[in-house]
Amino acid sequence: MKIGEAQQSLGSPVTAPVYAGIALSASDGHTAAELLRSGELALQAAEEQETPGYGFFNPDIAQTARRRSAVQRALTEALANETFRLDFQPVYAIRTGELSGFEALLRLHDPELGNISPAEFIPVAEQMGIINRMGGWCLSEACRIASQWPAHIIVAVNLSPYQFYSGTLIGDVRQALEQSRFPSYRLEVEITEGTLLKDSELVLHQLRALRDMGVAVALDDFGTGFSSLSYLWKFPFSKLKIDRSFISALDESSSARGILRSIIKLGHGLGLSVTAEGIETTKQMSTLRELGCDLAQGFLLDRPARVTDLAAIILRNFANGLTRRQPKSAVSAAKDLAQG
Ligand code: C2E
Ligand code: CA
Ligand code: CA
Image (cartoon, rainbow, N blue to C red):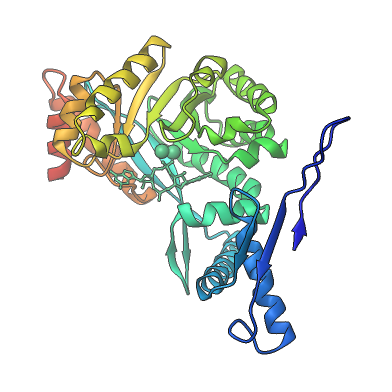
């Protein structure tokens, strides 16, 4: 059992969140040591819940804990051996079909576990306290690679909230730009609304510093978090990235179109450019074009690509540009791209 930090201010009641993990003899262990271990795992699982409470041990908890320690081991080794990799997913301007930039996406391949999704390993790295080192590496590597591209193509790097709490973010960004002599106006950072929830003054201060350096700030996964409108005008964003759940909803829900239209109008009203991500069908693409969305990213256009494939993507876009007599719609550009 664990009693959390008591919160007390003068004259107000003390609240102490209590978590408990319960293991039963003999199903959850035959020896005292085994039972204690099962109880600890049940406690850990209870602590991960949003509200304080208790939880019983079950075999799934043990399986989750085993998987987590395997991912921890894979992360530790990848950090020591420098075997992380960045892939890059193209982002296209919808009106012209031109390549606008790439989003850097972190990859972890483990000899035993195979490819591990960042959706799984990023939260583990955050818990382990190594996300800041990994994030610093991503910034340097993304700027180094992007410095080889034509000067109009930008690179976007995802930031974890923990990078803002570490105090080294601004220094890491500055170092990444300087080391590869990469101009700040070609770097964009992507943050999610979750980043703004805690210590928002501290985060705001750093976002302003980034903007002052010339780095663009995009609000990622827009619509999935709290989507508080106050974030949009209080924080210095340059772009909204609409979460892909809204794009896929276009196929199923008649209200999705109206919601997307409103989000795009809202972004434009605030002077932001708007990206739709997770575009998988030509129908989604044409709807977004009709709604005046600015930028497009998704499997329809290109999947995240290896660094070695980027030159071909850039050249293909350049060739498309040369043969384009009139600005081509992204729908036809998408068709060309899909046909390779
Ligand atoms: P995200 O920032 O929303 O990244 C976009 C994710 O959507 C990527 O998954 C990408 O492969 C996927 N995606 C792109 N187009 C489509 C599509 O048309 N359909 C579908 N179904 N998916 C599409 P990925 O690479 O697995 O990344 C997952 C998440 O992991 C990212 O979501 C981001 O939150 C996090 N992540 C990735 N790289 C980094 C990083 O370097 N640092 C941090 N802090 N987080 C990262
Ligand atoms: Ca992102
Ligand atoms: Ca996203």
